[in-house]
Image (cartoon, rainbow, N blue to C red; front, side):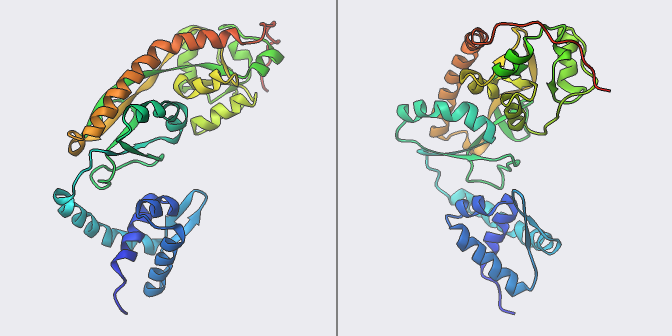
Length: 318
């Protein structure tokens, strides 16, 4: 058997790490069709199936995992060997962040950064996957929600987050507006325990024995609240655009501090990136403005809610 071409092996490794052919092709500056052709050719040469398609992309087969474990360290070694010789462009900045934070917070503000720094080309890579800055050397920094400590990374605190019960105005108009004591009588989204338990412990009332529905990601949770399914204990950073659009409203002035906060993180190799310095300074200004204006937004949101009605009769599931 002839040796498989290195570009096909490289495409295989990148696709395996990304778990998605579209993202892998974009990072390799290929079309999805071209990358798929390379992988099919590699599979034919080896006589083995390397990937299977799943809902959100692709996953390695057992044979694919075995091949990945054998060849990926060699590509990593090449990447590390070339790193000192690769010129860093201070006018190109690549940032990784969660899709929810990109759409709800960063993207609406980004035009101000680009207007102030037209010479900087910014690339956003929105993903829920964990980023390895040592291996993914094309990424300069990341925006992360977490505890504030990541081994080997600098972390710049941007702002804290808060959680508060949020609901659609239509649900308030239909069922009335709860008080802190009667909130547990309303349809709640989530699960027993966790932050809901912290909320009731801090502000009173009794948690229901049964919640209407539970979701494993914030975007789906907030969407369910918009559709009137129930009351969500939402993070203000993610719900604020929905509140400003009149799709959700916060129920109370009381807020519970979120478990984590928002940070800009970057490896040591990016510490002298002048484009990142400009982005960091701009982020800190935006974060300060956002924190200062949060209370005003909540006050306007409460002013748009329907006239409070009497709470519904207490009902419990059997």
